[in-house]
Length: 172
Image 1 (cartoon, rainbow, N blue to C red):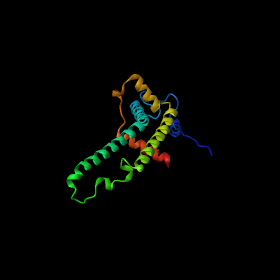
Image 2: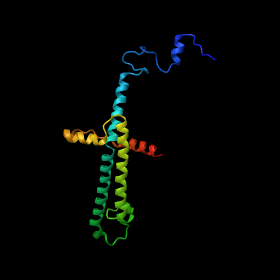
Image 3: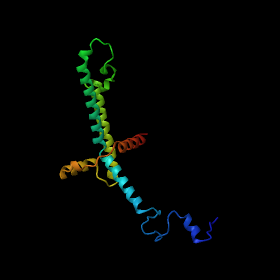
Image 4: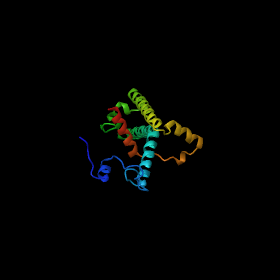
């Protein structure tokens, strides 16, 4: 059975894109403004920047967690002699062994975290390379050469959360 079109307009409604030369100036093929293209391009650059900064962001965040744990344990150690009479649980006694700095579990956790972060960064770098964008190592090398670390635009927590979600989806 052949499909018959009454008019050229009927035919054009069925086509996935307008015929050649039918684009309006200032609009792309789908009829969107060029501003939409600029927004998409900016979004793409934000995603690439997040991919490039993944390992740095996560390692820095983990260092902050480790610092806060050390700080809490030190503060508790300084207050402990004054409150020796009370029989309350200590911060150290309720923390999981993987968070206690001097334990084997913590050393194993830190190594696993670092290894996982490096593997994730390697995966993201391959995605960047496939897309024709500089990898995290290339960006770091360029920054060192240009010595412009103060001008770096860092990815946000929200953007990194999205990257983590992407990695979880890929793992599934």
